[in-house]
Image 1 (cartoon, rainbow, N blue to C red):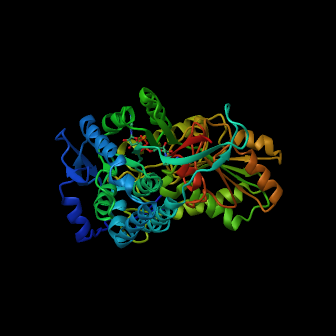
Image 2: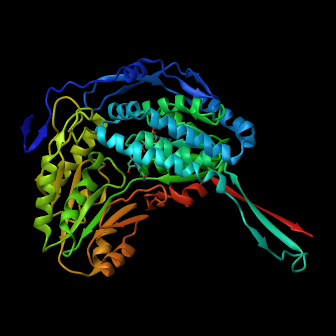
Image 3: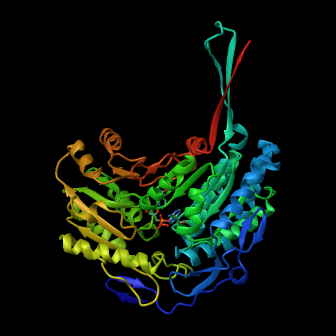
Length: 509
Ligand code: NAD
């Protein structure tokens, strides 16, 4: 290893790609439309690169508006076809079968995810095994438990007791699912699981930077018994395929995970037919550590919360508020962990910190690091990009950050922690600083005092607050953003509701 500014960069390491993954990468990828792998009508390709080596991995088709039209037509036909006649028990079985197939292809999918996204292998394995398939099975188990209510009513024209209303839960219809690059397979599953459990049909558009695992998933979907046209996968660019999907008059709902900026474009594009929209957008998430916190947990917890996925995580704890009595101890601890990361290709065992997704992302993060210096924050560690090859940026910590600085308010989406101390126990004051961003996605409170911890959790304006951990994820925990972090919730019963519509039927005897 070469020791560079306290960080270990693994040098000259040869990665080994399995034959199965090599074969898949070499194949002629097309679009999954109506159950058939179909070439894009554009005849154009998107090159996909390994962000750790910048080498070409593969090429995928660049779908355009005509391909989106074909995929939406297939999804519309499938919505009222065979799929609508299949029992909810069989829908559940098909989703379980898909989860079985993902498990059977676990190592191939993990390897693809590392090559495509850059995440460390252990993380890819963990996220697929403990989130991906669990998530799919969780939603499978909902498929046969969706029901409405019977409601005693007295509408005009009916005397009391001579009328009844019942509600039915119906699939919302054709869903356009647009996902980001930071955890590609998990986001594909997070959209498909509840949509299919609810009986919807889907056109899935993976991010142009990381389309490979979704295409592999497409082959598993073909084997799962899910009828043709229920899941369509169109790879393409956001501005063309994504825009066409969001505007499409025959799409009933868009479920989008990505940046706040693109989320706003999707809302505009959806106006034409007033399609329903769920948005999971950006975050600038606070972590508040009180002096009585268990620092054995809080210090590694804060480091993990910020640097997990190289900070390319909407829930990343990127703003650290620490009581002044423990400020130095906490910062020294987090710094020590950050400097001990072994940076390099995710397929090399032991590397626990990978590259950023692209050159653009690396430049964006480096420009925020420069901005932090200009704004007068104290650079405690990191602050550089790493090697000539791969989009690596050091885990970076700024201390003495002021809440008015842009680095404290704007989402950087990279490994940059902004720390500041507080001197008092005025929870409302701490909350007003912690909440002072356009976002409201996630947050955490670290304290042994249950009253302080719960009061602080109530005051943080976010869709999800964790106590003595950060960003707890489970398929049953509702997740989503307040303010400009989004519309609606995913996961849990609420996540499923977003793919259903209620029909009330009234009978007068
Ligand atoms: P992005 O918004 O640039 O892209 C997301 C997806 O939108 C991609 O598939 C892209 O092709 C597509 N897209 C781009 N322009 C489009 C358009 N005009 N119309 C339709 N689709 C379009 O986001 P990203 O860079 O891929 O991901 C990073 C962002 O995602 C961060 O802001 C992060 O916080 C957010 N994110 C949020 C969550 C959450 O659950 N809240 C989870 C992960 C990531």
